Image: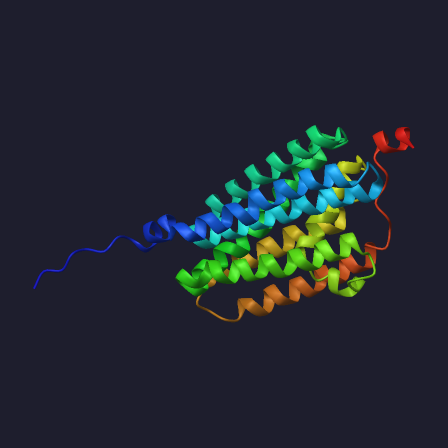
Amino acid sequence: MSTRPRAPLASRRLRGPVASWLVAALTGIAAPATAMFLLTAVVPASPAASLMRATIIAIGLMGSGMMAAAISGRLRIGLGGALLAGAGLLALGQALATDGPGHLLPAGLALSIAAASFAARGALFARSAGARGWWIALAVVAGEAAMVASATARPDAVPEWLLALLPAQWASTAIGHALAGSGTLAAAPALVALAVTAASTRLVAALWPRRWPYLVMFSAWLACSALVLHHQTAPLPVPATERAAG
């Protein structure tokens, strides 16, 4: 009895349902870009506005990278999607607010490390949950985005210890320092946290279906959260353009 050969699993994941790619485009590109336009129209130039722009870029980076990797099952696609979305939102913020990154190198480094971290998580969801991985990614993106956005709009709305647990907040902090031109050293704790979690997540994916690497990943996540919590009390510096305007 002959059977029709099935397409490789990677190819089926790469195609993915059309609805999932539409949701990824909405969460990672359309919604953050709309938020950037609304922010410029409603909020005047200020340190708070710069922090909001960093948060929008971080959410777009997370949505694009995590969703694309979870839908396709490929880390490279998630990484590429995150970098494209992050660079596009960064350029859009610079065009609208005329206070883009103080230095391109810190901004590029922050975007690259954050993109790798988010894409690694999405790829792990695809490997561990298969076709349902993108639903998990969507839930994670929605949850983290809601908390980080709430904390940015109302600083007392979310406890500091809870924010320190969120990689989206780490990315927002790192990008915020890049926008302010304070250099890489000021964002080092957040960048280290993103890099370590990316590496530990890739370890879990590489050794799947073994379960013990999850202990390494969660231990690394908690340690990185403690590192970020210890350093996140320092306020982000005011961008040079906003100091001149003030």
